[in-house]
Amino acid sequence: IIRTCGFHAITSNKRRLHAVAARAVRHHDRGQRAIGQTGLFSTEYSNEPNDSVDRARLLFLGTPEVAATSLKTIYEESLSSGCPYEVVGVVTQPPKRRKRKGKEIPSPVGYMAEELGIPILCPDKARDKEFLDTLEQEVKPDLCITAAYGQYLPKRFLALPKFGTLNIHPSLLPRWRGSSPVQRSLEAGDNPVGVSVLFTVSRMDAGPIVAQEEYNIDDDEQATTLLPDLFKIGTRSLMEAIPKVIDGEISIETATVQDESLVAEAGMIDSSEGQLWPTKMSARECHNRVRGFSMWPGTFLFFQIGDDTSEPTKVKVIESRVLDETAEATDIIEIGPKKGDGLRLICSDGSVLEMLRVQPITKKVMDAKSFVNGLQGRTVRWLPDKS
Image (tube, rainbow, N blue to C red; front, side):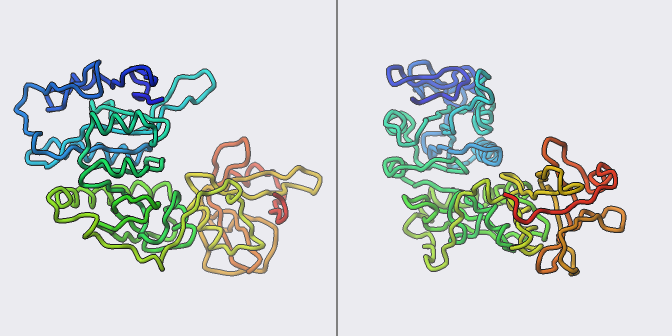
């Protein structure tokens, strides 16, 4: 099944693809192609002077909010005089239902493409034959851009655009190839971090590099705020590279080959990795995991509140910092003496993690003082062996 992203139609293999006609027609004054009901693209143009004959046909693939921002930037640039490309379509993940019988919710990229009047395709899998046939026979992209699309691209796809497929990847490749580069770089305590623009090949994130930029961060930067920053930087680097790719100055043959001896894998994160283990981890390691996993799955500990007869409480650690001091190891958690101090957790090596904001299970996020106020004088211990 290939979907036109749920805004106006869903098509099966027995029905002709069509995409978001109403919005695209309203965008005629921007020089966009009209979209008819008989196919993904019609042969009609707007009444404005057409300069798209010599422009490269760009197809954008992405899914989350950070990719939607990139799409908007790329599209707006395409409207400028002398831009060497036009955005002819968007590919994104199919809409999802938030509840069993709830309304299908398009991806952020789907919403953005709808707003901009760009044709949308949502294949269940990028290897679907009908999807690839449509790209080959109707979309005919010259250059593809991927930004957190979330699906593996088959060789047939990669063979379609004559200028290749460029990808924005938020790490300093070849370090952190894979699905979780920002999370793994923060977990490892990397600084600087960075972003790469590279050609996509069959092996994940292994293509030659077109551009790369380092980015210095502070010790408390979290993935939640870092990821959008890196995509903004990556999009800027991409925009500088696109004209050079189109005119042949940069190609997959001339881009910088990655050093395989420096590869680090950014494997998928399992929810179980969110548990902090002060008996095995230093305060810095705990803090880096809090930073890296701030989007998902988060980090947590189990607290014993009151005497040993009470049930353990799962508590998420939302924000933390590492104190420049050491203390005698203990399982007792106490708030610091000064205003604004957090809950102090002393790891087995004596390093001190200060938890500034936490979230007990079933409750809202709260600062350390609010948490302590709710204890009503009860003591708190972290449980080292609970899982």
